[in-house]
Amino acid sequence: MRKNFIERMLGPIASMSLVFLLGIALTLIITGMPAFREVGVLKFIFGNEWRPTFDPPYFGIWPLIVASFIVTFGAILFAVPIGVASAIYTAEIASPGVRETIKPVMELLASIPSVVFGFFGIVFISPILQKVLGLPTGLNGLNAAIILGLMAVPTVASITEDAISAVSKDLRNASYALGANKWETIVKTVVPAAKSGIFTAVILGVSRAMGETMTVLMAAGGARGVPSSIFVPMRPMTATIAGEMGEAVIGSTHYHALFAIGFVLFAINVIFNLAAEYVKKGGNK
Image 1 (cartoon, rainbow, N blue to C red):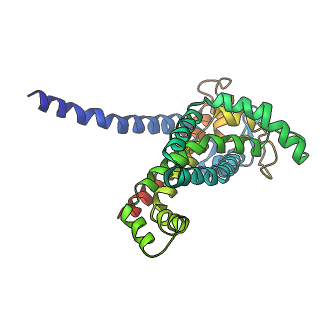
Image 2 (cartoon, rainbow, N blue to C red):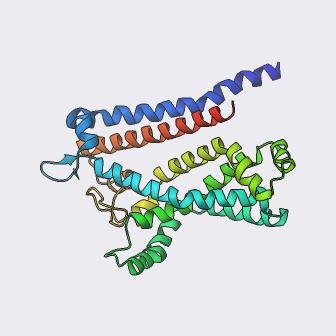
């Protein structure tokens, strides 16, 4: 009797995550819909000006979308080589003692609050970029990308390591039996066999970087125009929501537009995560 009761309770509890996900999506859609209706979906997404306090106001989020993708993919270019290399070393090369040292460091890196990373970007990375590259300011997309990349390394490394560890030992032994050395086995056998898991790690790293708020708000510079390169100040979608929600009048177009930005960001992250799940399932067939 008790077992049946527990089993009946587990189903609704497990389905709560889906309920919360749908609730978040509906909240963003319902609250953001007035902005889509007033501005127009295409004009809202592809408009080149975000000036919500002007008269008349402009609600085009294309500069924010471009900034988000520049910072995110800059972060991934930084995080993927370090994360994948760390995972390969930890899973295949490092001794047990070294592995037990590296993993807690990665976990500690993942637990550092994003605002601390933001301070690190402002105080340490920004002056270096400004001096070395001769930029007018070090608070730009590159600064934010480096910090986000550092934050995404634990995600990429952890999932990649799991994918590599899941590769069958029989494949490794077969490679050695054919005369391959350890490095050839890693590069030509293990990594290709784990490619779906590695791709999943990259996609989830993209989602991690795309959704970060405080770091980009502090480190990216905050300029609202369409960024011409990664070396100029910019303002991604998350930074715009965090920076302007407190000043937006409840019920105004500005207020609803911020929720509409949240829905666009939510949709992008869902697409990335569905892509990761699709690739993961394809790799497991």
